Amino acid sequence: NGIVFPIRCYLIKMDELVTQPKWARRLHRVIRDLPEELANYKGLTRYRATLVEWLSKLDDGSPTSPGFGPD
Image 1 (tube, one colour):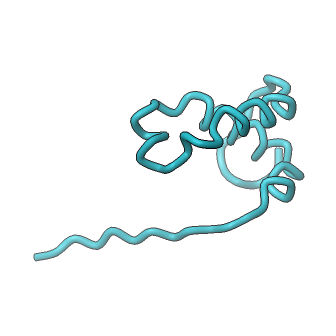
Image 2 (tube, helix red, strand yellow):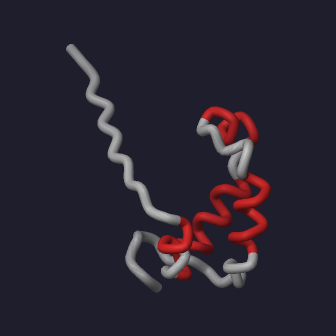
């Protein structure tokens, strides 16, 4: 009996990530709406406000389709 808990991590620079408008919108909404306890757990507290402010300029409020492909 056992449990497998795979984790796959990806690294990308923020200025590269935001070249896809869908990713910028989605990341803004996720980081903005993340519960404080989870943000602390993930180590986002220090830069969260700055990141949310920067990403907010890239979020035009349009809907985001499912998946990781461009809209």
